[in-house]
Length: 293
Ligand code: KIV
Image (cartoon, rainbow, N blue to C red; front, side, top):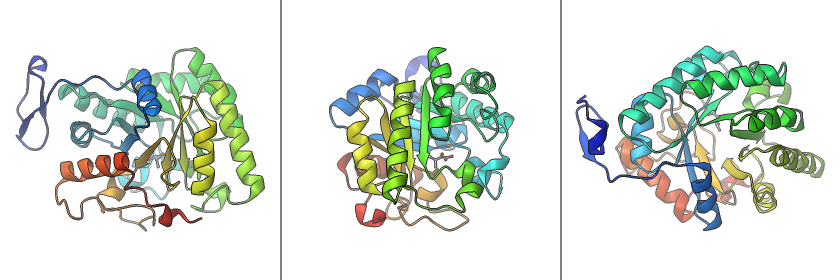
């Protein structure tokens, strides 16, 4: 790869390939709010290394999530529960370095892994600080109302937080598998209550994973401050996220049925990312027929 001086606004991605980039404004919480206010969908993808993150950024993806899904797609673990804070720090730092090197503008979110925020809010602050010092702009943690106190503690200390409701993979063993959540009236009402508690605590975003699309749409309408980011939750959310390996069609396990393989018909990673951005922005993805749960 060729090293590019930061001043000349040139993005580097692909082996030795230089593509000029017009200067872009960094994505920030106020910018995400403006997007929401004008009805523009927010795009998010997971990435775990410098190159993929930079290519996604250059393709116009606003938010990069260094998800603990890396345990499965990078480390070959059976679930996300085995991912350590040190592993998350390593990948957040790699992505952050890649974005800096290519003058990337994406908003970088780091997942707090299993066990790194469960003990106390002080433990959560220590873990979040590790990811923020590695370059994250925001941390994500899974769970309902029990995390609200922790969210408030982090937000009060200047750490933006993304919550995660619905299917929370870190609790897959308690949930009994990767199942849709919020299908009954009772569980839907509980999820709504938790979402409001998290918004009141200061969460700026909430990932809704495998949630019925009508519930996700209702939550999006109710949560005026906290942006809903759906995965398997229909097109009514304020934004969408997919796992990188899923949308590139290289998932080693079972492909979730709500995923679209964006490599098909593009055959090029950057073009696949651009197709994803365009499909989310125009409402062509996701397809609610694939979320008929
Ligand atoms: O870890 C991850 O990649 C995630 C996404 C599925 C939202 O949490």
